[in-house]
Amino acid sequence: MQNPPSSARAAAMAPSRWQWFGDLIRPTLPCAGEGHYLVWIVPLSDHHGCEDVVPALPWVKPHPARPGTVAYVMASRFEVRSLKDVPRFLLKTVAAWQQVRKAPGALGVSLDAHPFRRVFCTLSAWEDRDALYTFAQTEPHRGVMSAIRPVMRTSTFTFWEAPVADLPIDWADARRRLDEQAASDARS
Image 1 (spheres, rainbow, N blue to C red):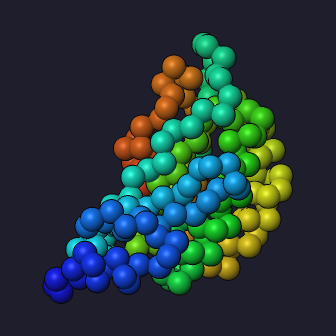
Image 2 (image 1 turned 90 degrees about the vertical axis):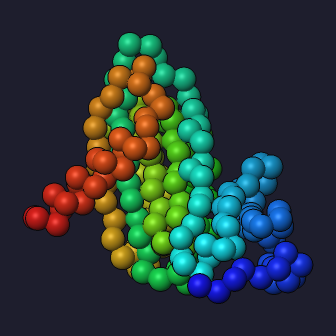
Image 3 (image 1 turned 30 degrees about the vertical axis):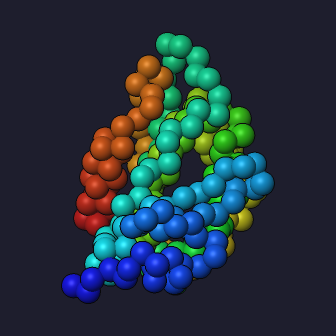
């Protein structure tokens, strides 16, 4: 494996929209002018091996859950066809990320992105199935899904119910359920 470039050389190579932090580069995308940024942290030494270390965006609670109720949970995994499709996917999904944070019935949402593996996962909890389906059929989400469909290699969706006391949902549980659903889809 090639040695990573020196700090000075790597900083010079990083595009201007990236921030430099020692051995890490951090590209940033502004999210609708609200002072929030979509951020990835990628160790340069791992970049050539196509492994990335990207923390999941933390669980955001758009609306409080009513105690003692059950949430309708959805986890999704998207894989884009090529690394060149990653920026387009991310730019398109920023609008949907902002929308879900204001969507009626949204109880919680998180995003787990692995851009160098071309894989993006979402995890969300809703008051009920109707709230999720209303969100999915409303712009900009509806248009975003149509726009990114041509660059998708695979997509997996799984749904279940959980007591609101169990929110936020654990990513390990969501990944397990996604793996089970993908295996079931492959058998079908």
